[in-house]
Length: 117
Image (cartoon, rainbow, N blue to C red; front, side, top):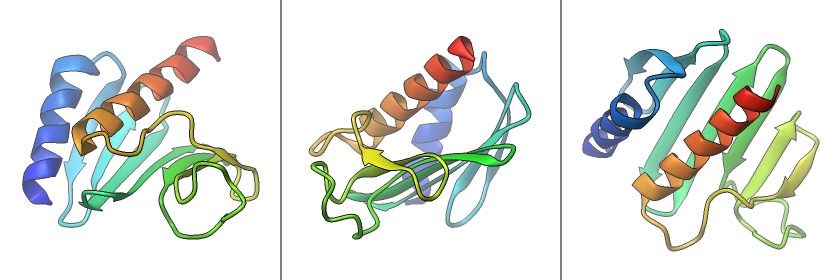
């Protein structure tokens, strides 16, 4: 897991330094602070279980694989879009993609939201 987080940090440095202003490496996650004073916690303990949590003031944007919301087509992957209770299908990450690719897809999604807000 720790090596995976180091790989994520390299991706941040190489591809997303325009939007990430600082990084904290913790045993169970990485925290990214963004240019708009929001932050992201990334947890990816095993290949097919993850949580990308983006906190923007009172709004949350989280893509995770917690095994609830069975009615979602992309189960167990789903997005909390703006709040805990607004659950939508995950059209950002993709089953079968590497953790690095799914992290990159998430960060591109964040960049798109930042640029269009």
